[in-house]
Length: 277
Image (cartoon, rainbow, N blue to C red; front, side, top):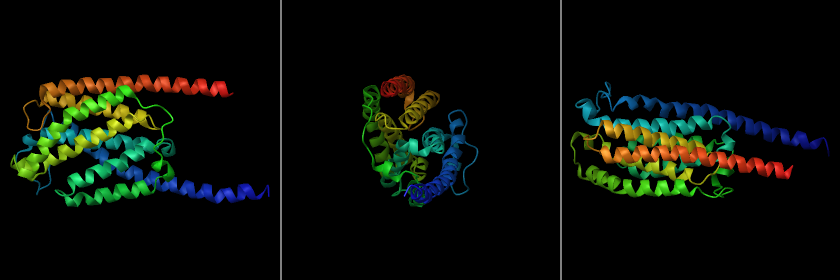
């Protein structure tokens, strides 16, 4: 009986190792897919020089600088950064995988009616979710730590400020306002990216494993979009000067609060371990 225990456990460990390998390989590919969008971060200071031949944005690239900036920030920094972090000890950061799942669920009804070809990206993300080496953790929404009230207050404030903006852009997309921008589905893309930013913001409040990464990435995205808004205050869709200042303030607060509360959480955990020992 004593010999049978390690022998029977070994196949399970091997299966888990293979699952981890598959997830790491696929996760690296999907992370690269999102990280490629980082080149768009230069858009506030210079219009992108390249678009596909059949893309309507190539006619007037200057019109799309804000949209490219938001795309690069959310897809490149937030989504790509979260996936990149997941490649290291993914079982210890289930919140980051839950973030990918919820982001896909939010993005699908928003973008697919206008860009059905993006369904393939959602399928790839779904396959990545299916290969996560700790699938049961994705269904666990329990809280070992109390939620962060400061981060929750910041997230609610951001949601209240962005809701009218998102509603206006959604209406513009449906009505076809803006010509080239509507044809390129820029308005709905901004709505989608704003929604995904809020998803990351609210999940960071939960303080579930991986929350620190989401908190920092969310803060960085808000900081960048604040700078982009100040650089492009008059561009259609931009948050403008007031929105830029608010985004800079909120982004800085997100980072500071995340670092501060992360330190407190680590201190409490260390004290608990010492008391047990």
